[in-house]
Image 1 (tube, rainbow, N blue to C red):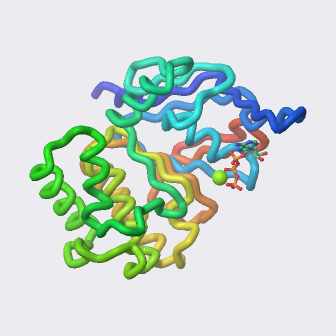
Image 2 (cartoon, helix red, strand yellow):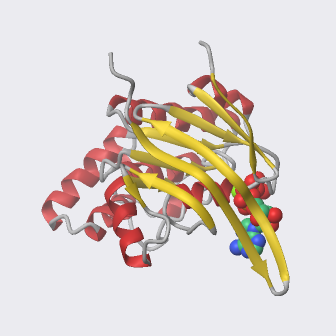
Length: 233
Ligand SMILES: Nc1ncnc2c1ncn2[C@@H]1O[C@H](COP(=O)(O)OP(=O)(O)OP(=O)(O)O)[C@@H](O)[C@H]1O
Ligand SMILES: [Mg+2]
């Protein structure tokens, strides 16, 4: 069998933030690649560079140096508009704080992802409904975020990240605001939906119990990869 395709590859990625006159090196030469169908955890101490790396992999942030290849295309140095295009074509992002629109119903929050990509209204609506069904929220379609629990809000956010069927799903501490059982349920459904389609997932987490849902753990310390290994079941 051929080795699974590499969907995402970072090489020599560095990022330095400038705060006034102070330079903050957040990443100091990171090499990492993610293959199709893989579920990776990104772990490391606070301030080690996890969010920065995920944002660069997700074309939300540009690296100061190095190469980031998404679905075979070099993205380092692309103008903002092109980066947005790559992101919309290939990447779904799940944030710790859900980032739902407070005045939109659950189904509308999911549909936004398709509207942005130019999917026609009727089709967008039915796909958004189907995505909510897939995360177990069929009965919450016309509920506002304020009337959903934390776990339900995060499921809406996952439906939104997955509805456009991206090849790559990136999640930054998606369970940090949830109790551990709810968190494990959310990760289990994220894994099932993504892997069922051959998508790759990178999840930033502090929760070692989530390791049970991963194929691989990448550890980052002080802006460098400290270890990167497949887990044996
Ligand atoms: N926009 C920014 N401007 C300046 N410095 C930043 C910025 N974003 C991150 N940093 C710095 O870069 C380093 C890495 O931050 P990052 O947010 O990637 O860490 P993290 O591993 O996600 O931490 P946490 O677990 O607390 O979320 C830190 O020293 C942080 O202060
Ligand atoms: Mg972070």
